[in-house]
Length: 324
Length: 285
Image (cartoon, rainbow over all chains, first blue to last red):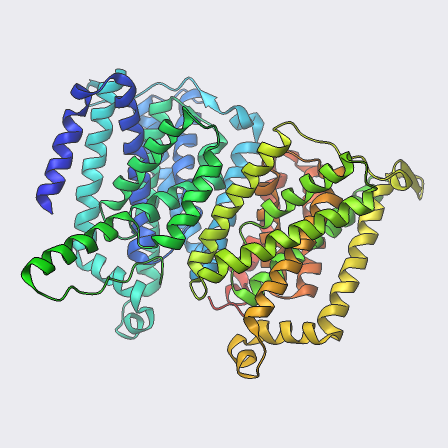
């Protein structure tokens, strides 16, 4: 498994030398979407909390950074840090509210909380320029490294995402990660064992808000632009689909889902201009026929073929988070 | 003067919201599934009614066409997609979300991206003088219509066998099943009735809201707020929640236009802080 990761990383690192700028830029978009999906996957896959409000932190961070840079004139790196701090704090507050519920109710509450932020960015036009969004964003200089052009932005994103993968993997493998999955599967048992289920969930919500904010910053600096669409319900649904299509609770899933979605959008946009329709159909088809997502589906195939050659009975498919 | 007009506006909006969210609440209460396609069905009803009106049908006929065709669409959705995912509530929510995208995009294909205006029927165009203030007749008609719909729904829920079965299903699905009520049959009926109602509301609301891309996603959160305020599965709750939301939005718009949309959610947040357990009625949280 580790070999596969190094392989994927090596291919990604070589990508800018194999492809023209257009595709390098597509790669950067895959990366920020994947990071966003990774953050959501921590909630959906490992904590069992399906959130429709994750764009609040993604778009929230992008807006705060954009506003601080354009209106208050803060230097990019400082506004980026302030934005990360803000979105993480916001996650703390909204998490405390939303986690008074679980299950379907949690979905609905996060949806509503996300809509508040979206409404704020859309309607508070004296501050946020409403529908038009904010443009003219300058990319920060990180450790003296200037991020200009397709290649350098791709490498910058790749570095950020690699750090995120290592951190999140360590988190999931840690005792905290194990306990978090315990609260997903057996909340009452965990509570009676003395674990503070609420606190574990809240921490997951905050951590996930932090990474979502970072993904939002990548988004902002890639497009040099942000509009209320970054907080819309439609975008929330798209990210959720990324997670579910790739495979809930797997580390590779968000990358597979993000590549697929980004690629499908750009390939299809050449032929049909009906992206929401395609997205809707994909959503229904995945939920109906592949509820576990692509990565677990392939893993099941892999183990089955291996066990057949060894003559061992394959374990029945592991229960996916979505079907739960 | 200002107060009278704004109060009437609030009441008219509240009436419209009730027609929007009554079906959402019943479906949520009975099936435990928030129908994410509810806003899209609202928009679809508006579009279909618009088409019927363009063919020269009278306003009332167009409204009935909208209600019936959206009702059929609802029944088909329940019978095919939701039935295939029975017992998997998360999957059902996601599937209705996918359907919402599909329906909204179909509306865009069929009716284009420019906002469409629907003229109110002739008898209700123009305005009426209410205690010295001019107020559009049509909004008063919508308010009256919503009260009529509420009364009919109440009769259905409280006085008919079907209503009793639905209430039993909302209260305790398994017990209702054990008593021999075909709950899955109820699912289809409630989904169909809820869809018809929201399709009707979509067309009736069109002269006030107009029809535009994004109408679906504007309406869905409103239905959600109403249902959170009024408890899931309760018609009386949806009724009260609709008028509260109507007032909050109208007066928010009047006093702080920039933040009206945010203000709309404040009662919901307050309830969330104060009594989260009662938030969704009998839906397990």
